[in-house]
Amino acid sequence: MSYDRVCLIGLGLIAGSIALAAKRRGLAGTIVGTARTAETRATALRIGLVDEVFDTPAEAVAGADLVILCVPVGAMGVVAAEIGPHLAPGAVVSDVGSVKQAVIDAVAPHLPDHTVFIPAHPLAGTEHSGPEAGFATLFENRFCLLTPQGASAAETDRYRAFWEGMGALVEEMDAEHHDRVLAVTSHIPHLIAYTMVGVADDLRRVTNSEVIKYSAAGFRDFTRIAASDPTMWRDVFLHNEDATLEILGRFTEELFTLQRAIRKGDGKALFDHFTRTRAIRRGILDAGQDTDAPDFGRARKAE
Image (tube, rainbow, N blue to C red; front, side, top):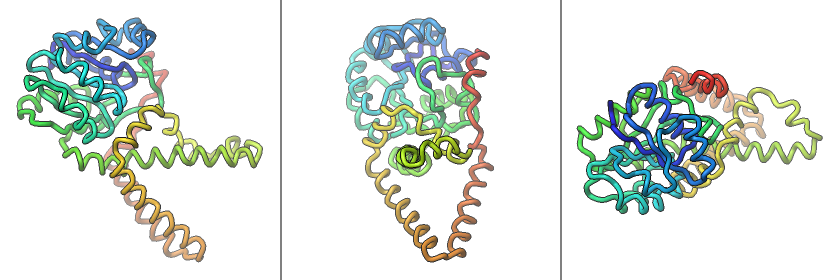
């Protein structure tokens, strides 16, 4: 058993999936949690995500040897300040935020010296949210990136084993580098998806719903992620500003290059670009990171 008492602060998709996976794999003795609303807390207890729920984070972390912050990035500092005085000696504190340097800057100052801080980012999720969205197989064959902050090798290995026990592929990465990589692979794609849905909405008013009515699979698949939690993504962009703006600038340059090629009828430039990017796409497939998450309904029924 990896940890005796695991505390999850925030009880949405990721926390729910951690709870279900940890229970299934015997990675935790007791799982407790807390959430902002009474409704969420009651739901998490009713469907068996946690063994106990508490009204406040300060109450929830008492006696826990692993605490995972599963709240939006913008709320992490406030939560850390609340739980800091109540953390048990030797407790491991982690998170699941999509941004790492901003989380470290916000959380680390509030953690006492007798705790261990190992920020993490599981590269997994769906467009669904809330405690009932979780499922035990969410992390299987998905990467989880750790950015240990002064943790010993033994402490890091123990936490690595926790995520590997849930089926994740665990790697370590510098926080700043993490934020640049994720700006490319996740943050900007989400921004573009949100933008395309907005464009489609504008066109819908002009074409009497034909954009929505005749949406091809490409549009549906590409914009699916625009259904993700708006609070989470607002905080991601506000707290990964530098990397996001850098990659967005590069994307804009590429877009202008393609625009110019189309305007000039430069078929060779278009063909060369599509050939190069097709090869990159195949590399993603070869890495096994294009497997869709299990169907939400089937996953819940299997629990």
